[in-house]
Figure 1: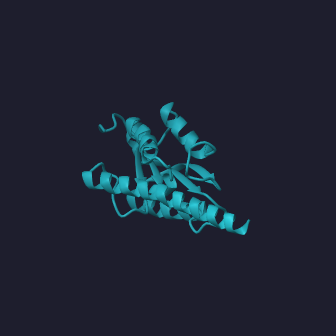
Figure 2: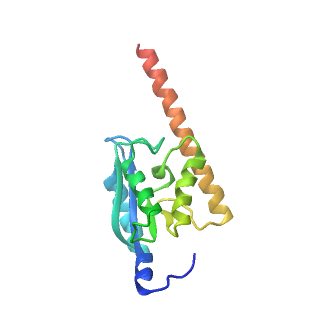
Figure 3: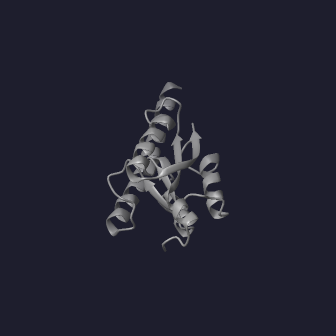
Length: 162
């Protein structure tokens, strides 16, 4: 990524969008709790959050039905952004895609457009280093596996009640 050419470009680098998602209404990490944590992270690092993309009550298994993430990706692909960074609470909030490459694909769309993605509650910096790449890949796979296991447990419980 090259240094922004003019003052407006430099200002946009400090502008950030946030993406928040929760799959149920009774979730500990509500979109409000995520937004609070993201705001603290933004304050510590000098970001100004200028846009929020949100998917409340939406599963992270697929992009279909997630208007917030779909709009974020569309805005980035069409150049309709005034921010240089997307802030997300953690890797699982970005998605619990069954194919970890799908999660990587959406992040790559951002990167290709010159927009970084930062995970605010993770113990690693999303800096492209080999270590962050490995940890992020593992966390993506774990997020998908969590959903698969939960699905099996719910199915087994429903089967027992029938």
